[in-house]
Image 1 (spheres, rainbow, N blue to C red):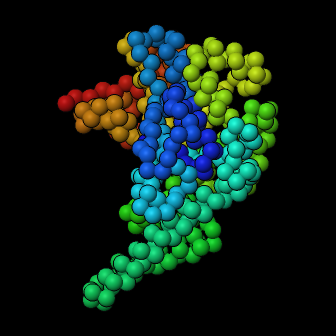
Image 2: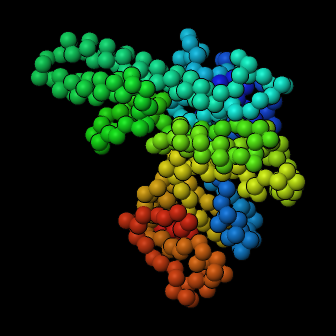
Length: 363
């Protein structure tokens, strides 16, 4: 799964990228056409931490999401803009960084700071990009319809009707992620790469001075710019990027000195993006490794097994399943079995968030 970081110039995109991926990429040096920066963000998981303390394995491996920091600002025009849109369309979700801080060192492009204006500006660019895609497809449908017999035009007519309806939604300023579609329409749209269908995490980049008001700022922006498959998180990206370079104990001490929340807002943003992608985690434990695995909500036990290795899915027999808290309370797998709390589930079992799985298979 991959998230694309977007936003206007000087909004703090690279600082956020550094914060979530623990990178140290220089800020302010990007130009349109430059290659994007790609990094991995670890999904915070207290369950994995506590099971790691219990089992003391050689490795602790959290679930991961790829984050991509694209150069430049907005969508843009011309060849570079078209290439940028194609890159964004391959993403699974967008992270929209919105500037909400004043700075003499990093002035805003037009000298003012207005989060509402900047959100609406980028949203409009994405809507126009989707409208352009629809117009081009409708033109092709018109040309195709003239070249085939009337009896064969049913599929094209269905596409035309669907796209014209979506064009109306976009024309009224409505992102397609908020449009309810039936299963048939969702299947038909799978071939298109509409940007406003993607989930979006709006990250409001505030100053250190506004950290005590972070929850209030987040709540206000969510009321105005939230909606279906949209989440909002407020943080100070430059501070989070600085803290990401420290050891956990040092970062905790610095947060205490600053009087800010112990929980990392950058970590919470990663967790929010994980949920937006429709993912949750199951866990595997042992002396060698304790690991969190990302699976789509609704995945079955064999599908989860396939995340570990394709052979486990191909030769799946059954899964031994326990809730992570039950395992923690028992203190060991042996004690969990003794208490009769280790369940056996078959191929139809739908994996739950926080399940600890042991896959039995034969290839």
